[in-house]
Image 1: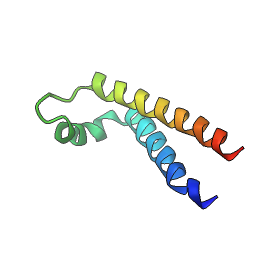
Image 2: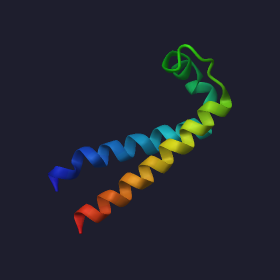
Image 3: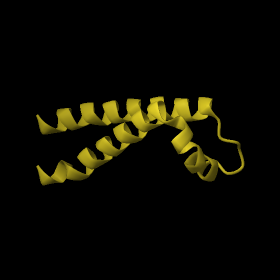
Length: 69
């Protein structure tokens, strides 16, 4: 069970990041301005990255369930 601890933490991080981006995009705007330096950060970009992070967390969760069985 300890072999999957890192993947579990990464799934939780992706899910938390995605939900935070959907609920509080104005709080994540400074982070995205640093992260996407040459481009300007927009609410549409934060929304798309949040949806992608939630999709990634669901994909990793399914992979984790398949590995445990």
